[in-house]
Image (tube, rainbow, N blue to C red; front, side, top):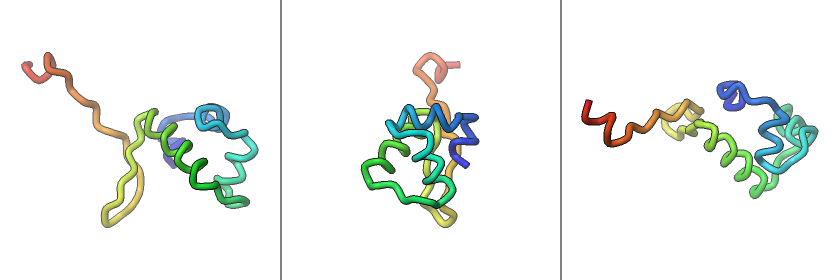
Length: 75
């Protein structure tokens, strides 16, 4: 869902996270479980793209809100 929200290809996410596309596909379909360091790399790649992971009552993902710079705040 996070990758789809970014319109990111499996190849792009795999490359950003430093894993092969086959490995990423295996994770996505539940054939394999990522090692903790690989999971961190995938999370970091998704967050760099603008995804925010939520951990509230309904864990999930959403697009991170854009941050306004000082000039935009004055408008």
